[in-house]
Image (cartoon, rainbow, N blue to C red):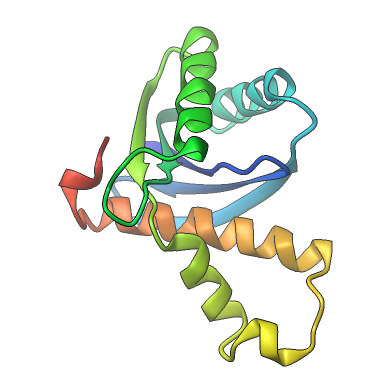
Length: 148
């Protein structure tokens, strides 16, 4: 079994999705609240051991024209910390539009015009769905050139 872990990185929450490379099976695993990066790295390290992960895919937010963003710089630092603790292949994968797509799936109509307020539970679902969409895109091989 070749288990994959997709990470939708956020400064407040991180969505995790798991998948099997051979069976092309994907599911949302959980959302982790971020207190600090070191704590997050430890929690992800535990998931990697428990779920026997062989490869990690981290969503890398690029700008609309493909340029590096401030959030992208934070994600690269996060990846470097993970690499020091986890001996697995870790890939940065272009995640442009995954969060927007997740929001559109959860809220088919314009969210801002709906009058609803984002609750923490909804935000967690958005992070989780974003991780699923990231892993789905990776497994489908959509844009092997999306690897950073």
